[in-house]
Image (cartoon, rainbow, N blue to C red; front, side, top):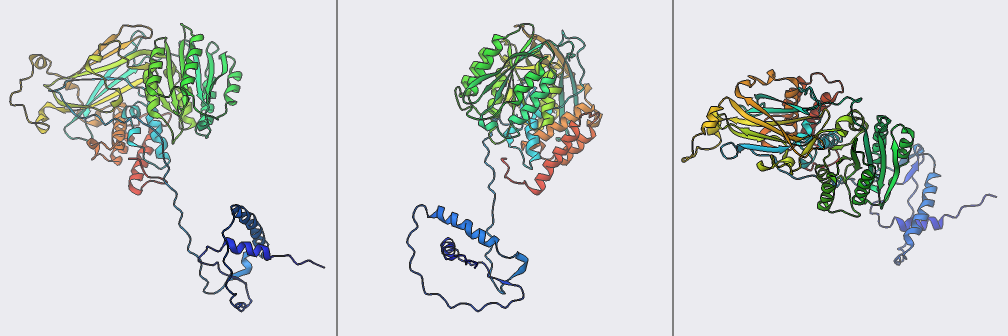
Length: 581
């Protein structure tokens, strides 16, 4: 005889779990049958005493039985809702905007400067590319980047350019200039200054003594962090020569030497260690830097390039965490001839501000790895330019001729500005250039003829000096100061920019220069700078498209797509979060 299941306890517990609901779900009736006659109302139930502390767990457990009974009902298509049954309205679910802890240097854009008041502009070169890759990631995610994340010079310097190159290594780079009309301000001109570094062939480069300092803390677990870096480091290992030497130091709650100095010919051993890295624990970044420098010093090779490559999301929370202490430590260590490069990864807690400070203190460069193609670019394709310096403490100083120029504005380089007297002071640190690196700087100038549109003339002002009048055919004079690696004294290059060299139209300028101008316009637009308020994303895309030229790796085509993405986000809004603008 079949036993009848006991359902009373289950129903009672289900009633308790649903007591707070204000709307009851519709009663289901088998299709084709009449609705049953409602049962007479039950007498009021006695008040239910407060549930004990563990009632919730009992209800949850019992709820699983209720769900089991529901699953044992006939298939849904065999039932139809009772007529006029009222269904509860669905509760809208709103995903909160993601909270970001990313940190960036906060610098306002450079303003226009009157030549009569400050005729000289001085800055350090910057070969970092981190800002461009970060902006690309944000746009790819359907979000506009924070204003502070956009550094125009890093956007411009991300791309390879075929500027005139020096013919011999004794002169580490060549200086070329172009003058053209400004596409965003009628009547103004742009002075484009280009530095092209001497490119060392792979067979000519010195051997490398590299310490990979890898953050393996818990925050590095996601796929876009440690796993992505592991892919990049495998590509890096494949490029090593037999006489190169690699060590690997890791840090989390503490530090460890994961790989003692190993020859580049033993690639399998290096790759095995890379593959076995795992993320967990805290972030003792300061201690990791100390151990990495100690490792590099212990194996220092005076005939090699000695460099630490730090890979991190920049979150230091154990050991030395004060940025000023970290900077001081790195400044002291750079005197030993060990360079520091930093590759940033991740989104949400990226400490870009700290990464910038560390690389500027350590005679190095910074990049941001957002995908495998960028890892390939930074750790494989650009190995020579990233690893092998050709000039240290590279500074640029531009003096404008008041007879020709009323005002100027340096586009970008806000975090790299120097005082005028820093130019000749060889103790003042500045950026470094690697083999084949290019550096681009763009000044927007207002011709002297348009000075009246800027300010009223001084009642007691003095006329232009005779020296300026004697050089009246020059717009400006460019000086570049640098040190050859390992040498304490600086050398200097000079280049005069003549007014009659100006292009009559922007279209007459070379492709590389016009494309750099398009990228500079895009960076300014992302930063919300008023100078390009009337130069739309569509105008920028058109300028870049017409200046693409040879684009074997597709970087320039990708840039045009990024501009179109920013344009689209401005039209339809952002997906998934609110901009940090």
